[in-house]
Length: 243
Picture 1: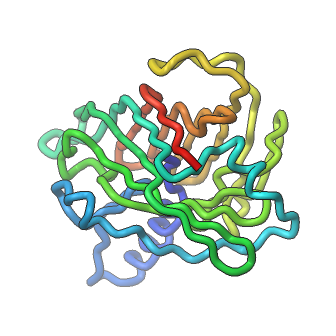
Picture 2 (picture 1 turned 90 degrees about the vertical axis):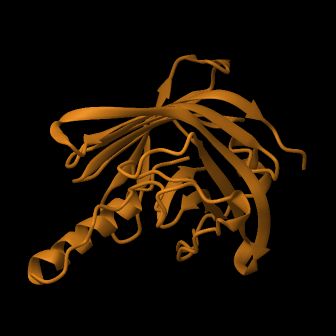
């Protein structure tokens, strides 16, 4: 469920292009869940976003070890209680808040050459948020390659997780992901242990996610440094798929 910071980096590039061309204006893009619609499309109509595959790692890890930490098994479902704050279109000094449920479910798995495995995730937001909210219902892909899991060109997980470890978050950029150990995490789903906080800070935004081994992401906090768009999610339900 990670917020896609790679999209944020794309926003920076698009913004630069806007400065050089007075006739081109680029509307704000979602840094997490891009969508071209303002209303929720039926699940069957949403297609998985196709993103370039990450560069293969030089330290491949057996898939079973990665999935023991991050259970990307068809049928696995995470449900989050969510709040997203956004700018009031009628008063830029005021923030409005959407509250709802975000559900993520592994709906497909496929293996390709090079030992790469791609999992398709369906994400749905209920109720449908207003058009000012960047995050939309969608399907996206987690790619397991080498020693980690990628969402687009962002490495969101690396095996093995160790205290205070760092890894390069994006290919082609200097941003790093920092993993810090955390004591037991209390969520509506229950009290969890063996958890880490993943922190990534870029020029336009900051993302903080809590990851617990055997479950995956259980908390998410995102703040955009420009146009207000803040997110807070916490795990309320978890169902492990069957291999």
